[in-house]
Length: 440
Image 1 (spheres, rainbow, N blue to C red):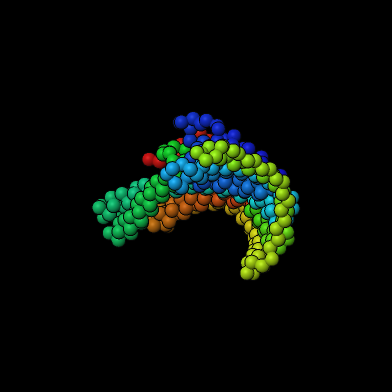
Image 2 (image 1 turned 30 degrees about the vertical axis):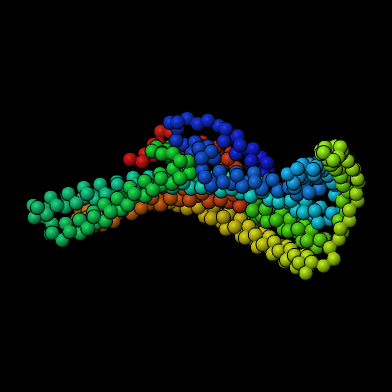
């Protein structure tokens, strides 16, 4: 089980880790995003702000000390009236304040809510970094296959044009191949733009320019989730999902707040020690003098009637507690459904990776057969081009399937509360520094 404190500690450690200026791996992008991503920065600030709630709730129950000083100047110009200076101090301690106690209990729950929400934000950062990184790799693979497809069609167009010029083929064949080449050129241009956009998304996370990344190893294997049973992941999610924890704690905090509002009808008892001193300066008519007074008071206050305000606030808090309970039920159901759907998607993507890899072998075989048929006159050039494009599409499908698997596995871990920076470093080991993903 991944605890909230462990996840937060790992994030803090990563924030202090120095990175190489020349390295461009998933781990490096993540480390930079931890320190520079504005959403992560806002989450840290919100977390620290929310942690003050518990201190504020406790402060109401602790002793309160106040001091004051007041100076009364003469009202006439002849200085007959003396200057009077009054000093006062008061130390008070709440002895019986049921609403404050329940609010303190609510603050305890909200303190834990802040931790769960911060953990959720950290997991979200892991997902956003992974999506952005592998979207670059996805766009690069798409660009490479689109460019290779364009070049292959261009060679075919040149051959068809040469054969037309010597009278071996009609002009319609040239026009048909030209149209296919134009479409491939547009696709290649769009792929170039998509790669630029993908690299720009990394800059949104890190605030830095990136032009070269490490690619995924060719022998990367898509493995089924462990354990394989869907209900095991549902159990993980119910026990560890941070959104679900935050929702439950929010419900508990709302219940305590409702109790505090209901208890506003009860009396409050406070003990106070008050000290005052009054100095009177000398005048023409009188000598200087001072007086001191100390008193210990036991104060009891009880609301009798406030125009219905107290009762209304109690009902409002009760309804808010009911709303928090229903939100928790909804979050629990959504979490269970998300665990099952992400588990199924991951299982499907494992099978899809294997199928897409086999499809490449089949497409290569089909292309060879089509080329052989073209050479003996049983297939035409368009058949060859279709077979070529099928092969390139199969390669793109395989590439997409691998990245889809990686992201679905990470989302499954996220909903199960198992996702941590360690998963980033595990994926980082699957990168090959010799495979350069270049922007230009």
